[in-house]
Length: 89
Image 1 (cartoon, rainbow, N blue to C red):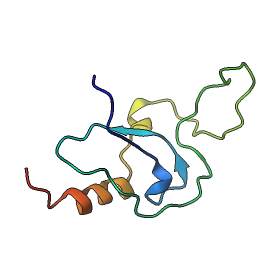
Image 2: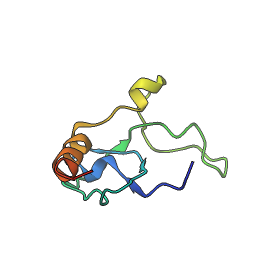
Image 3: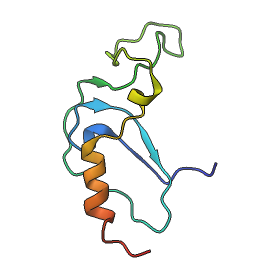
């Protein structure tokens, strides 16, 4: 795959979680944050240990199913609709 165009975070769109989301944009401007809030924890657990072998301290959500982990949050969907909905093809 080509390199992504932009990385966004859930907390930039009103959700109190961190979770990097890569976007591959073609003929669209970068998405602008709409409601930056302080993240309380990660949406997806990063595993049990950091790369240096020490335990992680984030509180990532405990679920393991890919459908829940890949959820599209309403704040991001709304920002996409508002910012790109009138873009011409």
